[in-house]
Structure formats: structure tokens, C-alpha cells
Length: 429
Ligand code: FCB
Image 1 (spheres, helix red, strand yellow):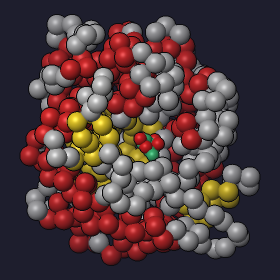
Image 2 (cartoon, rainbow, N blue to C red):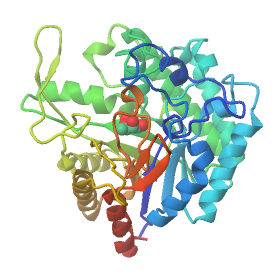
Image 3 (cartoon, rainbow, N blue to C red):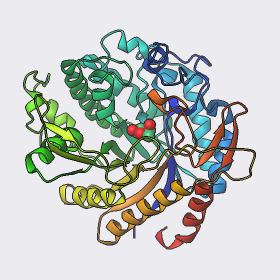
């Protein structure tokens, strides 16, 4: 039987802090966070969980949890402060230390190259609207592979390009905060092109298991056409081209057209070793009114602090569907929930709803696995409470509570629960 990895996930900008240290360049999130109103609590990732300095303590917590793998991202602007060209050795040295410390703790490093923190210098030259950024990404991928592929077995190129393109360039909720569909579609294509070029660069420089992380929202509804339209937007838009099927036909793609050049679709469809699946909730839709092709229906069941419906069956349905569409091994690279946790000095922060959420989703995942889905791992989002993008520090996703005033870490009940689950499932190793 294949080894099954129990892990937890984080990303650089959300936890590292040390935004101006050791030669790190600015990212689009540093600049976006300065915009009045962009972040709910007016905060930024400037300090975050101070993981850049506290990583030994955080790895000790991972060890206590019994994590078998840890998914984290490398901050591109730490490695290449201007996005391309000049290398910053101190930035690379941080990830060198982190990887060595993980290995020493017996934890497998699972690296994401891009979790949304584009170097600001590249944004000034067009960001993901520009084809050049895809090439810059491949150069950066090569540098990271040369430095870490001897010790890191898993590399994911992008995290959730859907969010980078559509939230970053269409709705403007995320950095760089543009509101322009044409820019978003260009960004989407250049992200995917960058992914394909990075796959080549990673493999050429020693990476073993190479994949991509996508976010999915299985769609439910009575009306087939509405479901299909929403499914294209939420699920197929990035998945189809990566699986070699090209972009799905969609009413909102035409006009404006995607900037596809000859050979791009082949690069985008380069073979992968795994697919990373991020799942939080589902969507329910009905036919739209007026200019809107679909209408989103309100949640039927209870929601998390994000307003996202708790729907573990969606994870089961999604895994079954993906295993029909591709034979790639699957990893659940993110799954978790925000709840308004409070700490008043106790040893353990009680978070019964998160325990229930994780229990039900893990159960759904194992049901799919038992029915033959090639599921190889599960990563909780997130190890620590952290900077939740446009929500700042107002949403807590961690299984470990962070008291930001003191940077103290307090395991929640869910951390204790997860630790027990990992201990209980030795047969899967
Ligand atoms: C995902 C992101 C991750 C985190 C969770 C809640 O979309 O990849 O960074 O914000 O949502």
C-alpha cells in the first residue's frame, strides 16, 4: 500500500513575518495591504506569526503533533527581491535551515513555490497580465529546485491559480486588487503557462514529485445548465487545460479571448506526478437573472466563521469525480475551518466545531479512499492561526491558537484530536 501522509499546511506570507529582513523584496501583498480598506482589520503580514524567527518552536509543535509532512510555501521575493536576476542568498538560507530542521524532526517537506506573494517588482512590469512573468516564474523554480530538490521530495508549482487570477484581477479582493476581466483571463493563462514551464524547470533540476494545487467547489443544483456553468468557472477552468483538454467553452470567455500562443496548451498539460486538492465547501446554484448566468443559493446547513457551508459529502463527491477524470495520485493539500476561537489563559483552546469539521471531512476522504480513490495524503489548513488575506487576523483557521500580542502558541482541542488520529492510523503508513 502507498504511504499515506498526515500533515498540516501554511503559506509564507501568512505566517513568516520578517517582511523587511535579510534582503526580502516587497511582494504584491505588502503593497496591497497598505491600501485603505483592503484588509478588514487594517493589518498586514509584516509580523504575522513571526515564523521566520520561531520556526524551531513551530517544528517542535509539529513533532508533538506527529505530523508526517508539512506543506509550506517559499516566498519568491525572499529569493529574488526584484523578481528575477539578483539572487538573495540569505533568503535561500532560511529555507535551507527550515528543510534541514524538518528532516531532522522526521517530517517530510512539501513545498509550494507560489502561494500568491508575487514580487512587487514584477507587478510593476505587468504582473501575471504579462507573459514575461511566466518565464520569470520558471527561472525562480529552477533556483529553488537547485537549492532544495536534494532534500524535498514534493514540489507544487502554484497554489490556487483561480484565486490569483479571479480574486486578484477580477473581483479585486486580493492583491494586486485589479477589477478587470480581461486582465484576469490573461493572468489565468500566464499562471498556467508559468506552471507548465516550472514543471519542466523543476524536473530538469532534480525534483522528484511535481504537482499543482487547485481549489475546488463541487456544484449542486436542479438546473443542469446553471450547474454546468458554475462548474466550469469553479472547477474546470484550470483543471481541464492541465489535464490536456484545453480551456472549457464558457460564455464569459468570449470576448475577451485568452492570449494563447502556439504550443502553450502543450506546455500547460505537461505530465504531473500528483494533483493537490483544496476543499472547504460546495456551491449551490440556480439559473440566473438579468446579466448573471447563475445565481448562488444560500447555504442549507451550518456555516463556518467564513460563512462557508459545512458539507463533508462535497469532499467525497469531489474525490470520486477527480478519480474518474484523472489517474493522478491525489493529495488533500488544504481542508479546514475558521471559527471565532477565544483564549483566556487555558492550557487548551476548546474548538469543538473544528474537531467535528475535521472528523467529518477526514471520514469522507477515507470513505473515498476505501472505494479506490488514489488518495495519498491529507493536510489540515492550518497549522497556526495566521494572516487570512483580506480578512487579516480576524479569522482563525489554526489547530494551534496564536496569541498575536505575545506570539504564544496554544494547541486547540483540534490539535490534540488530530494528534490522536495520526497515532491511531499506523496501518496506513
Ligand atoms: C485558501 C488559501 C489559504 C487560506 C485558505 C483559508 O484559499 O490557499 O491560503 O487562505 O483558503
